[in-house]
Image (tube, rainbow, N blue to C red; front, top):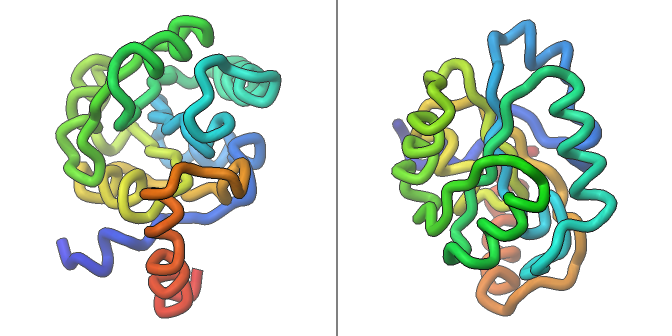
Length: 165
């Protein structure tokens, strides 16, 4: 896959709660892989919040299998996933697709049945695209984020301007 195509999500929406579940089902999507930090909740949170729970409930009630796919080390992300009652792949190495592939294996889903949802082009979108999944980029949950993510945001802005998304 062309590196620039791997940076372009299939769609961009404001929040996880704006996912069009009917459209996803019509595409054959059965499994949704979710980033946590600034996708389902605040960056580096240690607990899910009301928004996290609402998003998971919305998607679960729509009939999707869910899995958290996080670059965070195991303790924090697996604790959050446990409290949300969803499986988790920790230390996913995004943008490398290996974590997404592990999630697909865990969920017994093919890449064509899965959707990767996240807030970052250079991690979530690229990992999902390189794994062959449908990708959804959400606007970040909160402007507050760790410094090394904040450093990437100007480059993401350039990619979005060039790609017009």
